[in-house]
Image (cartoon, rainbow, N blue to C red; front, side):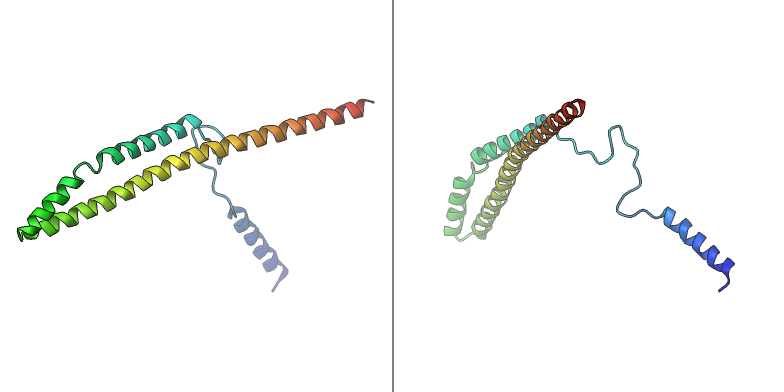
Amino acid sequence: MAWDEWEKLKAEARARSEQMRLNMLEPQPSGGGVAGDLKVNQQDLAAVGNSAFRLFEDLGKHGRAASASTQEAAKDLSTQEFELGAALSTVEKRWEKQLQTLLDACAHISNHMDFTQNAHAGDEYFIASTLSSIDTLEQGFDRGAKN
């Protein structure tokens, strides 16, 4: 391999490496702020958590309103040897299962929003206390430098 050929290959490799980005994305145009910043609004978290909790309560109160009468109708129809009785019973059981799944999801969302609010409040306290201790330390260094 000639020296010129080697230099050409090195230049080509250098040009390719300048185009490559590892462990990061291209900068995205955004509506403001620094790309990658996470912003949590406590009021938004509280609103989502409260909505999930209200839905949980309302579903718990009203979601089973027809359960007793549906079971009774299914039993009566089955006693009279109508196949509709077994089908109605199946529908009621499936409704109960789906209702419980939805109740669990609402409870999970509500609890997660409460946890998230508390976690972020703890993070904010930790960050503020760390920064204030750094500021105190810097003031001590500044005073020591003046003496």
